[in-house]
Image (cartoon, rainbow, N blue to C red; front, top):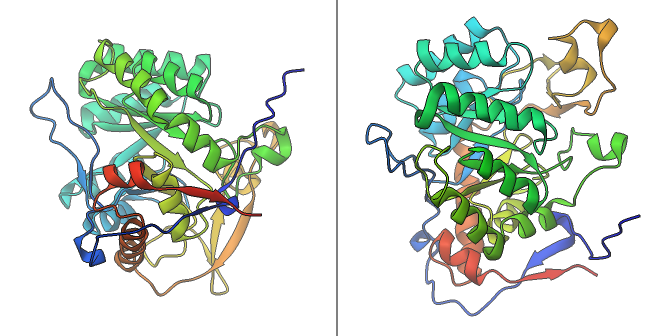
Length: 352
């Protein structure tokens, strides 16, 4: 038996201490981030976001229409992959036609290479998420390796999910540019219940994104010829966000970007079924989701659930506006004028 006796915390278990601040207005606080800085390919521009948030690549959260709305609001969308390759291309091309940036998603299943080639060569997609429940695995290593061999430095790869520094280090070593952190924290993910495997999300983010571990990732990237020239490791806190303050807690703990499904699933632009005035929101390992893409006779044990949310009258732009305002206030309480400062100044306590 190997028991780690260090206490671990979810977002609900921690709080941010208020501190002396010289920020006189939250409007002076900058919530923007540059996601990538490609040193090899000058045709690949820096991707700047006004708010460091990405909508989850779930079929009830992000399609092309949602990705457009996220981009226009100053954030980012990740188009889900639970559709035909042809439809996937159409959703991406719709987004690009509007001049909006987004990510497209891949798995490690039988059609993943065909999907990647179609999106890269036909649709000219360059920003990819390789998204599987357990990213620290040979399947992920092989998929990243194949993509680097096929697309070289011209694909920006976000890979996950992991919940340990060792997992993140390996993903960067295999050729990822960004890593998603989070095993089982989402409201519609039951991995932690079915398997017993998880790390409480705030602690996972704080450890994986710590300055000590971030320096290790940067060293890997500087000396790694597999990635596309990015020298700055990007770490994404994925899942477990129940309220805007949780985004501040994730960023203060060290994340560069926060992915959420729950905050966007009820927006008027979000895809997915609506039943009696309610909006369906489901995990991609739920029975409902798996039935859309698999034969019911060969379904694995589900590790997600379906639920319904009250349909919101709010647009994505309104929700992103609330998030930005909340972040600006939170950062001002920590005397931080930008996200780099916030990582350095945020102080956390544990609820009794």
